[in-house]
Structure formats: structure tokens, C-alpha cells
Length: 34
Image 1 (cartoon, helix red, strand yellow):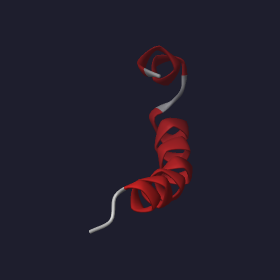
Image 2 (spheres, rainbow, N blue to C red; image 1 turned 180 degrees about the vertical axis):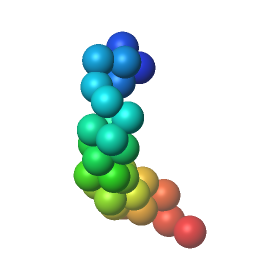
Image 3 (cartoon, rainbow, N blue to C red; image 1 turned 135 degrees about the horizontal axis):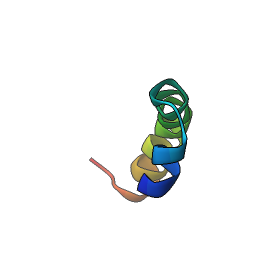
């Protein structure tokens, strides 16, 4: 992931992370019950 980020511009990387965050949060919410 870090190697991939190095090949991308910072803007592209931020867009990628922004698109991944909701999915990650949903998965965490599915496995971790607060």
C-alpha cells in the first residue's frame, strides 16, 4: 500500500483513502459491537 502510494500523487492517494474509509468503517462496525 505504501509502495502504491509512492507511485500516486497525494491527491489521488487521498481520494483512494476517502473511498476506502466508509467500507472499512462498515466492516469494523460489523465485527466490533460498541
